[in-house]
Length: 249
Ligand SMILES: [Zn+2]
Image (cartoon, rainbow, N blue to C red; front, side, top):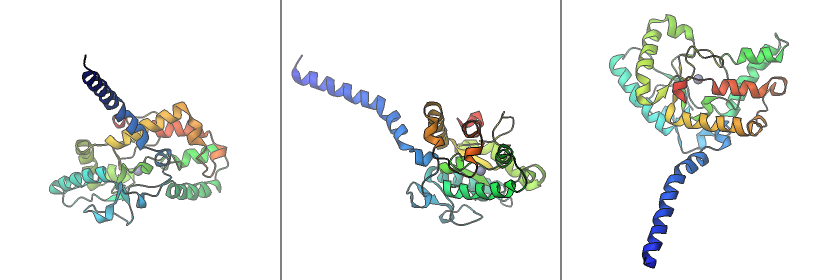
């Protein structure tokens, strides 16, 4: 075999190997621990876009989302409005970083501490609907809450019922799954309003799960919110991060 042919074969082999290895390598590198636990500023991250700069209706300024889910959400919104022009479809929450989530947690922890003595019970109460800072899917820039954060609205209000039916039947076509659906054993209660952009969120949860299995302390040591040292932190984190709709994995 000629020397040039051998070199070409080695070259091809290297290329094939790097094609095989590169996708997993880059995927693992893309999501840093800081991004997983929300310790970053979405307003300064150029992968994120301000929702109030798009056509999407929002209930407050300064909410951000990653670009791809935003594009898909705009398509879904436009298609919804063609059929239901009078039904509200409003983004009421998008990316919430660790600092923001910590504010929510601290307020609820302080309020409940005045009434309840057992830290486990306090955490259990907050965790019905709010995440421990560092464990929220809202950290990921892939998840949004739509129109109302009250189950009452989606179960009893005519407009809420129509909206929820449409979301369930149609949002998956745009890449979204309902993370906190009914019938799960553990984790958060049913949230009709919370939707996740699966192509991104499924990578985040896979990475989060891998760390929880291989080196949970890498995450635990970053969680310094009120009461973290008084509760069964690791088992709560595992339950609440991982117990989601199987469609979202
Ligand atoms: Zn939510």
